Length: 232
Image 1: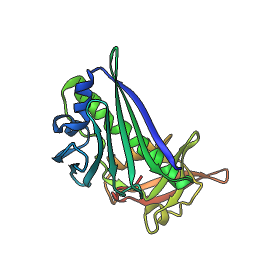
Image 2: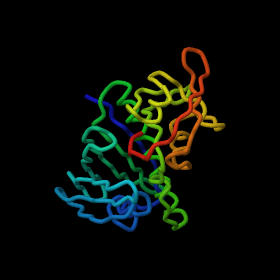
Image 3: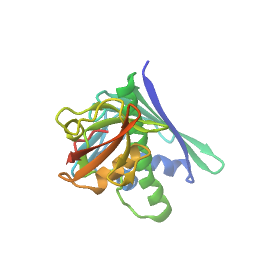
Image 4: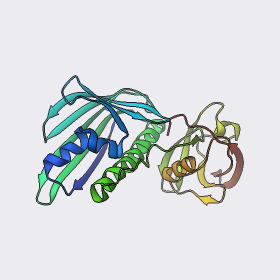
């Protein structure tokens, strides 16, 4: 059995509205992108159009209104089909939401996909919380402009390279598995989120100094950012 991503959080909403946050265009567009199809029934699907990033599709597998929603997501940035279960539990203060996403394998490469999924859910759900609190819809997740061509896992020391995209910026900069990224230009790096921020802020073609720790030594290589490819 592979790894399962899990996340539990509280929404200060009655369960009926919490359910709507995952099933209606009004709410979904606040944190996932424009909804072009929304058919909430087994065999139906929800499709999102994300400018510059193509489409995201949820294939609806199971529905228990106000209690449980299950969908399948075809392989894309994560190279496997994942099954996501969202459960809704009424509490005294609102609704407890639990997300479980299954379909991850074992090994460092899969841990990188798992860490990227964790970041993705956290950043996407920030849009939902912002909308619920202020009424403002703002997509901060799907704003990548460039790619370093590195697959990373989060470690206590910083993001560690588990693989390098052949021919990508990291490959051309001679980065390799086991390198720990600690700085991009003058900006310190503590986790994958910092690398994501850099690739959101800078466009393809930007030259960047990538500082890593390798075999107990600080090394700085020069890379040129590539177009965003959709990976972690």
